[in-house]
Image (cartoon, rainbow, N blue to C red; front, top):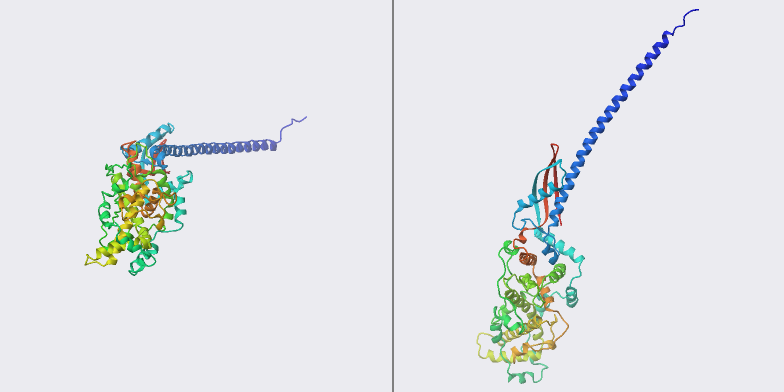
Length: 489
């Protein structure tokens, strides 16, 4: 028998098969190694991005901490969110240190805080008070404010108060009226008044209408107002150059042209009333006026609305200035009413005729209108006096609502019927607020500033910020991370 042997070709196939298996093994090892390396790299990258995300979240936490440190007094009393960028006298550097401290406190150990730099601030008064106006509008959405403004708009019924469109035209027509108009259809009125005790009202207005004296005739017997000057020099309106608007009336009534000029200077609120409706409603809701009961010992001014209008240094000056402006507001309307009242104008003419006989340089007609202007001024004083006492005065004057008499001016100022119709003192202040421009925004910040100082003496409204931009520099295992954050109320 022969010996059996493996075929040569079989051995060759086995070797080839082993070689193929080795190649597959190597190939699979290479793939696994690549996948492991890729996974490792991906893990490192993901971890780095995770750390960048962690750093970003940490910066947001720091910014939130900053926003949480708003001025609580301003928010609780005026519903405005802001923070002091000067950190109540500690400086902006302290603010950066505070942000850096919050970062280090909240960041993980492998993240290093390299630096914090403030890039910019959004101030409460920037862009023509854009942020203040926005917060006022937002606050009105969530609060029920006084209905006084709506009642004011209803009472005015579209009346703009324009001198040129209404009162001025009537006054000019009266100036051209013939001398006989006031005697027709009056019967014995002029004869009856020729022996009356009526006196030229200018003798009264030339004294009582002077600044510094006026309030003595207008305030109720129990009325008191401080003359202490409390206005600080570093408030927003002073630092940003906003000056009071001075209104004066020549209470001597010796010049007809001056009288007409005085009647035109502070009588029109026009479209400003509707345009400024929100800020006026807000101001009357959070600020006090003379007729309010003010028991807040923190407040620097008792007459805060009056300060928004006048911007003077004391309650006395602000109240008196507002009274002058209210008289200027009411004077043309009272003049219009008086010139249309034949009985009362006959009294005026009896005085003017007597004076014209001894006054060579002025006609009787000119004297008549000056006396009428002085009487309308006295009537305006009486109206303001009633407003300060808590009564109402209708915007359109009628003869039946006339208060004063030329026979006894001082006593007659206290007479007259009381009415629940018309506008209150606060509502008349709303009309004056509508005539102011951006001055009222500066002065609102003034009042907030001075009151907030009573709680924290280092606070200054000129440092009041509503937004901030910050650059954060961090590192993670030698890799720099830069994050910029903006935050705003």
